Length: 106
Image (cartoon, rainbow, N blue to C red; front, top):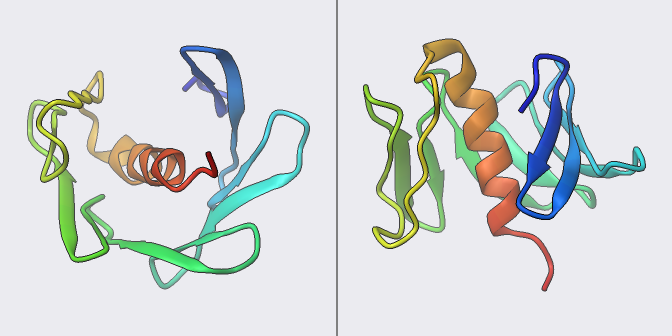
């Protein structure tokens, strides 16, 4: 993710993370949102997960967090994800984006 919130993935532009917790597709359509109470909802308002102030999350009874080195723990051990740099202020946004990628329609 760039400083201005543009998110890219292995296939190019993925979306845009806005300061208010909204995440959009590259064309500006709503992808999902982090609400003030910590709930993550998709574009239709369906709750997908919750994210705490420290960036830890709970989705489908799975607890996820970025450790002190920035490595995602609690998820699929074969799917190595690392937040670089492991800045505390970026953990919540990084978790939001990670969760939204996991709930994308196939």
